[in-house]
Length: 173
Image 1 (cartoon, rainbow, N blue to C red):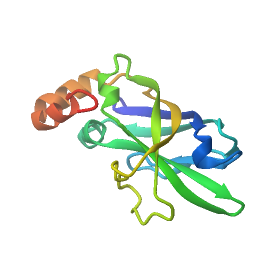
Image 2: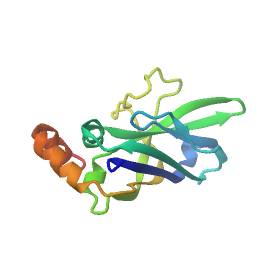
Image 3: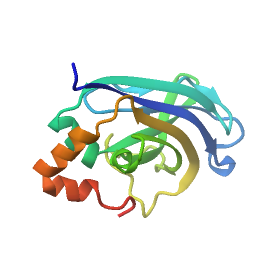
């Protein structure tokens, strides 16, 4: 269909702080996107794991998706593994509206991973309290939409000006 598109997210690598993780941690990254199942990278060892993982999501570019793109953040969750046990230890939230600010509908960047308290009771999908969170690594990733959605975005922003003001606010605001 003409409204169908593919969103790709690549988790390239991480740089992890030795003082937080020790010498050779085993880690993987998980992510949840829109109305799709959780995806996870392969398990990798070391302070500079190269995940080389790409998730592809087929989607329909409609008002629901555009609202999600304008207002939601993609959360990457870093998990540390000890044998058969693993725990979510850090997160990184990337506002998806950054794609709207990108001239080509694609981003390649790095962003800090923030530590979670040990054995955190934080519900999945909730941001860590930034006052207590500290950066413990840097995640390198990219994301893109295969086909440009400029016309659909322009029509959506005209139809929903309140969402447009949120989506077009400067990143970091």
